[in-house]
Structure formats: C-alpha cells, structure tokens
Length: 389
Image 1 (tube, rainbow, N blue to C red):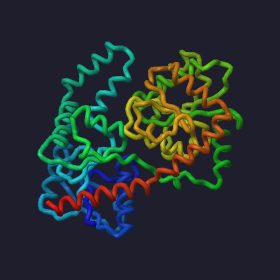
Image 2: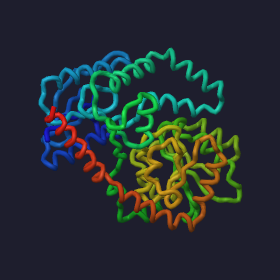
Image 3: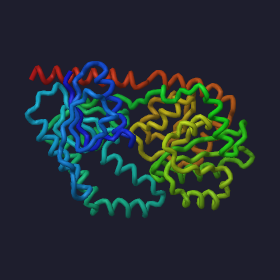
Image 4: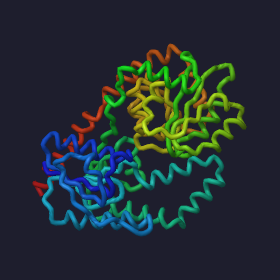
C-alpha cells in the first residue's frame, strides 16, 4: 500500500505519538509498503531510509493557531495525491483515517475538571476555560475534524474513548474502530534484570524484601499523585512499603503534602528518568490513579515488566486488565479509601506472586504486532472503500 502519515513534528526521541509514528513507519517499510511523511520537522535518522518526506511550512504564531495552520497545509498537500490511505494524528483533518491518541479534547477538558476536589475550584476552572482562547480554538478545531464535511474513519485506543465520541459528538459506531494502544514488550527484556533490581534498590536504600509501588507521570496533578499520597496515609502504619515517584523534576509541593500527612518516609521522589525501565524492575506494582488516560502506556509497560496495576475507571488501559488477577480498578481517584484498600491488596506477597505471572501473560497477549495487524485491516478497508467510490 501507499500510505501517508501526517504529523507536525516527528522526533521519536521525544516519546508519545512521535515514537509511535517512528515504530509504525519502520514496521510498514519492513513489510514493503511505501510510506510518506507530511511534517514540518523530523529526525530522518530515527525513521526508515525508504520513507518519502514532504516538507510543510513550519507552523508559527500563537499556540492555539498553529494546529489550524498545519492542518490547512496538510489538506492542501494531500489534495491532488493518490495515496491508498492517509492518516492523521491529533489536531488535523482531511485524511482518510484519524487516530487521536490523546483522546478527545472535549473529554480531556471534562475529566481535567475532576482533579479539583473542591466544587468551587472546579466551577472556577470550568469558567476560565470558557474565556481561554486556546481552549475555545481547540474545541472549534475538534468540531471541524469530526463534524465537518470530511467523514474520516476514526481509530480510538479504548472503548472508553469510543464512548466519548458518541457522548460528545454523537459519532455513529460504524465510523469508529477500537484498536488498543500497545508497546513492544521486548523493550523490557533484560538478562541481568535481577542485578539491575538489586542495584536500583541499593540506590533507593530499600531492602530486598520491602514491597515497592511505582508511580510514573510527568503531569502529577492529572495523573493523581495527590490522591495517591492521601490514600497512602490511610494504609495502616504497621504495613511496611515504599512508593517510588518517577516523572517531573519539580515535586516539592507533593513532598510537603506527604510530610503534612505524616507519610513522608513512605515516599521516594526520584524525579525525571529518561528511561524508567530500571524503576519498573525495582518495583513490585504500579499505581496510576489517573483522572484521564485514553489508554495509558505506563500501565502497559508495567504489565510487560510483570507488575500488577492499580488504576482508575478513567483509564482506557483498564480494559486490558483481568481484574483482579493482574490489577485493580478504583472508580475515582478521589476515593482514597478504595485506593488504600487496593494498595493493601498489592502488599500481600501471595497476591503479587500470582499477579506477576498474570501481568506478563496479559502483556504478551496484546503487543505492537497485534496492534499493527489490526491497523492494517483498517487500512485495507479504507482503501477498498476509496476504490469502490
């Protein structure tokens, strides 16, 4: 197939959608497909040699206007092409397939408000978004993507996001295809894993028998670090464990909250890690009490490392868990009692022993190869529909 991918910046070292596009393009090229990239900037060394690049004008100006300019440039560039399938990501339009890996802006905005425990704070935050030019622009752009004259096939990475499309925009089910996110579990294979675990725990000053939970996120507020700290404070003091916090380097306010609640000794604030692999190896379970995640890669990475997962109903990756065999799902991050009970379950060594095996089995049952094959089926379907038209 002749396939066009559209994304403003493809620098795979930055992670997220850019890493995904790099992985996907290399896999497509390996299978002999012709792959085009329409972008403003890219790292050719991280992309297949056979990829054909199409330079678009660098989007400039205010942040909320740049997506409009890039989307317009994509639409113009694709207007007279004969690609079998074109695929867009995030804030663009005019492609045959759209894959919004970050979910819907409307849903993200709705769930972001949930992080405020105080109803007054929630109301003020919602009111501020009504006059925020960026929020208004993104909302309008999203309506253009999905409710405009173009009727793309939409790939969503969880049934949760599928429900959001129906809830916020009444998109009919026949336009939506659910293909869960995936990772390459081979990235977490290491022959010296036990050695790395030991060395990491020595750095943390944690004994081999001490249970360690792991929290990985850059956006501490959205991913529920404060609710996690409050939940840890509800776990009886005689239960010995540690929580390792990996992510944004600025965490002072969360250290203060842990001290104020009397649980500072239970937390290891580790800051930023370019590669958190050894943190997974050194831990025993993951806690991801997020307020919004279309399909969290952190949860999938934890499963690949054999870590059972605690997450919330606001995480599409919860659909890939086999509860309670390899994880637990709490209804709301603010439910600190439920979150504390889930942590206590993870502290049971017998539970962790069996859950570790189940976690690895879940990771091997859904890999990037499964994701890729499902994606090719959508591409073939779209190509057939175009030729029939």
